Image 1 (tube, rainbow, N blue to C red):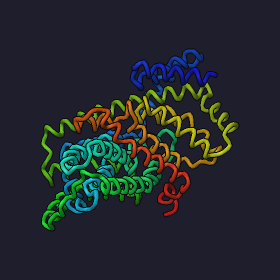
Image 2 (cartoon, one colour):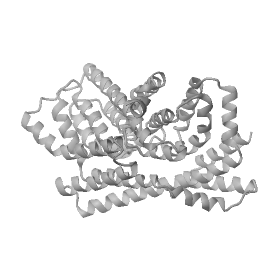
Image 3 (spheres, one colour):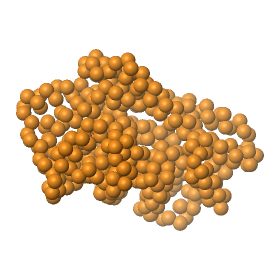
Image 4 (cartoon, rainbow, N blue to C red):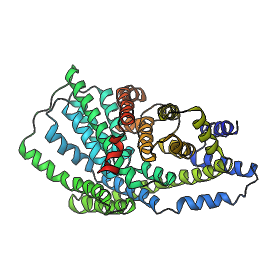
Length: 424
């Protein structure tokens, strides 16, 4: 009963419009005060949340993605991929997904991926006769690859919460990320084959392919450097983020020369704003997590699940349904920071690998990014495409179904997640 009252109080605060960080901190402080625990736990929790070397990767990855965004590398990536695959059936849609995947590998952010590629792809695709709703839905869904294909900011946060290997989480995201890209591409080709207004793109000349490939090459090398460095153990995630940030400055400031001081200042300011918001939410979650642990809420929920849910499949189904509902009114990071501390205790009892669960959780969080009314990617694409929320929302449903289908695949075929980090 206590657990339900606490969760009801939290959701009431969130629905009242109180920022997530303040709702978590305030409720945590209230629970500590009512329970007679020392109020010093609040400042201790706030300070300990920021005392993490791994979390330094968050502002560095945000800096890298913002520098690349301001430097216009999304335009170069899209032009290069389009030159090679644009003449295929559904070629522009294929180019869009491939561009999202490449940019995801150097940003770790779904919002940056959706905004960067969407700015270039939306006008190109609509001019070629792709239905506007399909284009908007494709970009909103393609942007979610930013938090699944490593590096991934939500995976960093998940690793910090559960004390699991962030490198293993990154590697585990590669298989599902490639699967989701393949499913999106397959649907795009099928859709273009039956769309009445679709106009095939002409085959690009070899000169154009060479020119665009040369311009996009430094960005692709940067993405490969970050991923290979993490995979081989050459870099820790934090070191990879630092290398990626320096590399991004070299790519857009020295090689491409598309970044000036004004754009750099804007990139730093936006990264700082996002970092502060993330760290405040993490700090609030730390206080809230300490309070509910002292009230034995995670232990009670774990015991309840162990007694009433005997199979991992039922547990995963229940979590998926809860996350879909929560995704209607909570953003991705808040869902993770609220739910993971509560659920993590039940994983061992049900024999669920925490690395697999982290990837599953991120895919479900991806779904929340494109579900109305508060799916963050919907607002990003609405702003970039100058569209109505109805247009964007109606276009994402096929892609949401594809993402849920991918969840079924990784549940039945766990090696899709676990093979690369543990068997290669």
